[in-house]
Length: 619
View (cartoon, rainbow, N blue to C red):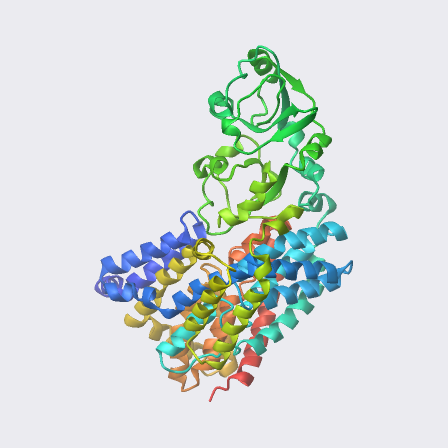
């Protein structure tokens, strides 16, 4: 018995399963970046000798990896030319004051736009739009943020290029030489699920209505006065007048070392010039303080002794009112931002990120699970779903989107439209996308070549430049996909795929074809609770194809089931970055996603199981 157990433990399949479990645990713990976990997986396969170096690195030569990278650039072209924002502006005008109408138009717009660009990017664009609509209609963001994330996930079911799992499953079909999906193979089932999603969310939104106090905390409105109240800034931010004889006079902000000595941040300096106040927030580190300057300072420690500080440095405490922010609004503003899931900013503090040095903005408030954090915020570790309130020059706030892929702004200032750098090239961007779609639909050239042609056209028409193109690629996502591909190869090489297939055949093989699809969908949904939808597709695609071949059936309906199930990540806020992004702005709890996501996943499963055989027969 011991010898049998020992031989099993030492078998390559046991090592593969152990690595898979370890990767899942690390994904759930979220202490390491997902791309780092993927790289560790690749390293482990090499060191254990289960796979050769060529097998481990095979993903880097996969055309679909290049295609996904090119699609990131295409999506950036839509953003830089303002096409994406024009769609969102149209939504605001067309919806007027009807919540039902705005929900329907919102889901249709997100699903349509997400068919040709990253669902994560689409949701990031529409979050501030939804917040503005909620403010204008005086409704809770809870009622529209969940429909937004659901539509973002459904957009991945609309076309071949809409999401990475579709491309992964199609690549496995091609590799196994059993068929391939066309550009619009997903569209019929995607439309059915979209209609089902719209009807479901019109009903389910009523379950998301929260109490008035909680809705007040999560409304994320544009008004500066509202932000001041919501983040309790009156107790944190103070104004100090610099008196004659102060040791601050003649020194720069950097020379004072207020942050390291007292935990204080100078947010802005008010100085009178030509009989009017001038407010400075950009490059404060080099600004020399003068007598009669008014310093707006963020005090992170509640027990800080204001009187002693004023006496020591010859300062005078000045009252701060809401209109003080209103007066500065032309040059200095506030905005709420949130970290993009899986970005390098998650798990680090503002000090570690050198946030102020890189972006010229100060973090003056953090909300986590609808609760305000206190203490020294610069040293607080940023988590996914956090809401960060930043203050600084409006110009720097507008630039935040272009300078980093680690954060996105929830409440953009009204001037954000001016930050679109290639607005005049919008028609050229649309033309480039149409060329790509036509080439893909007609199969004149391979999909990756069609996307490359579109990117070159976008560059030719100056819709994008080299910096924005390379910067738009989410390299962490690509590494995650490449790093998880060895699991698929290893499971096939060690007999794991055949073992799972035999188990499924023995369990549900005699219950009918539809029950087999239900079991396959359920397995994908369960695996998707712990790892990303792309990793789920990588693991499940070869299992589905082998299962179909063992049963003597067409692999197409089985592969399509895996693709749809991989995108049906509705059940938890960690199932997909799309869900994580709306967690904070919507003020949701983990239970909200379970309450809404589980029933809808079951509905999607039933629709998938009964519609797919009509489109892709078993024989």
